[in-house]
Length: 458
Image (tube, rainbow, N blue to C red; front, side, top):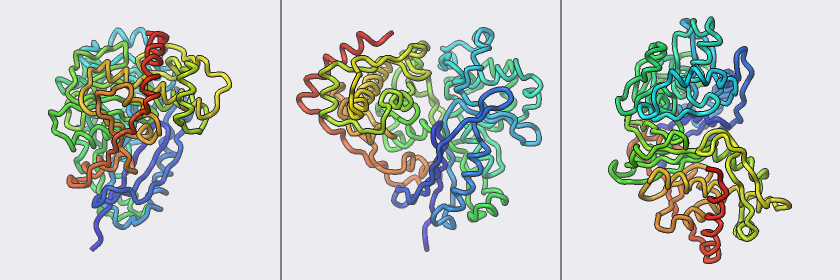
């Protein structure tokens, strides 16, 4: 008898992907991928949920061994929710990068809860979910008055597949301004504005909402018995796959990469968090707060590198010798939010040298965030940075006392998907120690770091 498979639906800010996973081996059989886009709605920029939805149906219909897919696990980025009316029609799917949300900053800041209650920093644009809704309620009151349901982004896709509405804490606690992580309850802002009434019942990320709807089964050809789980926030999926393989009391640090580089420190002290440095308390899949800091590392890497070339060791040493560097920041959010990024000494560089500058920048920023959090234990690198040929090496040279491990297995959050689908014995992610730095890099890097920290605004 053939064994069941899992479909992982991963909706990131930049790309969306469907991966078919074999839980017996923890490997990805095949994936379908698309680039995401935003559209202009009547009031603001919006996530193009209709186009993603159409692509999703095709991806599931064309999935290999679709008759064996028994569970779908939705994963999606944070600071996103879809608002529905009483008839379950989509009213708005705000895109957090719309500058218009800042029009209400003054009054919104007067009404939001104190940082030490929510551990949700005051972020630019619409990176606080509460600011998105405040903007709509104040400027589009007629539209907002028809809101009946709010679905956090992973749970929106779970609902589209199953027809069952749910809420889940990893997205609810993702710098939303709507959640008190210590009390595990809605913020005063959410209650005062009566937004808490929009949320359906909370469910664990691993809970089964139900089978796929009859319409989805007919359109995709999936087995009607295929189940849909509640789903989880993407960075928390990365954290989960490491935390379930370790003692909950063991200190470790996860560097989850993608559009955002998110550093999550197990067992770190929440009192070290600083609002002005974009530090926050994430909420893990079990409801516990996790000390977190982040910056838009993927977006910044692309802005600095400006090329698809890969970094290499000779180019890296050339960059360090000429003191070419990137100074923060090149995207919204992060500890240097509001500062304008600069490239210093970067004229006439090759593609590999530009990529090396970008890799150095992301490594220096990651080290800074790990230091700010007081994070301890092994540093576990996940996502695109784990496949960068120099990132782990540089971070290891910057932090020689720490174990730096790379998640080199294919399939991204496959281990988390297996766990959430009920396959708790699926193989753990493959981890590889970072390549040790050469003596010349070990010698040259401290002075470069000192120069970068002196010049970085802060």
